[in-house]
Amino acid sequence: MLTLQLREMEEDGIVKRTVFPEVPPRVEYELTEIARGLLPICNYLHEWGTMHRSVHGRRVEETVNELCPGVFIYFFLISGCD
Image (cartoon, rainbow, N blue to C red):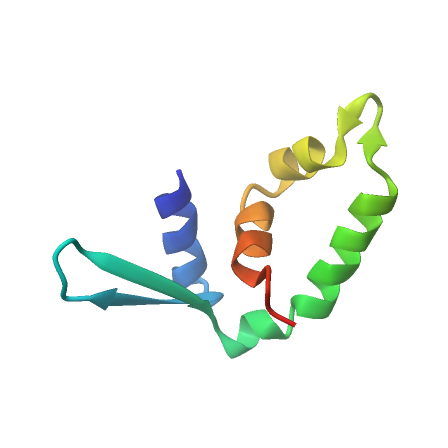
């Protein structure tokens, strides 16, 4: 599932995938310039989700993950990036 979502984001130009010819194999992903332009929007969504922890008895993360499965992978990729 994670690999599929990362590959879709690569096809959409959101992440760049680098494969290193090593044993064991190593792959790194980084945000593209297009994705960096989305950071303010993603940060706002994160802040909104933090302020509204539950929606109809469910966690915001569960609701958003059902609507946009790649969002939390994206947040994982940008965590630590300012």
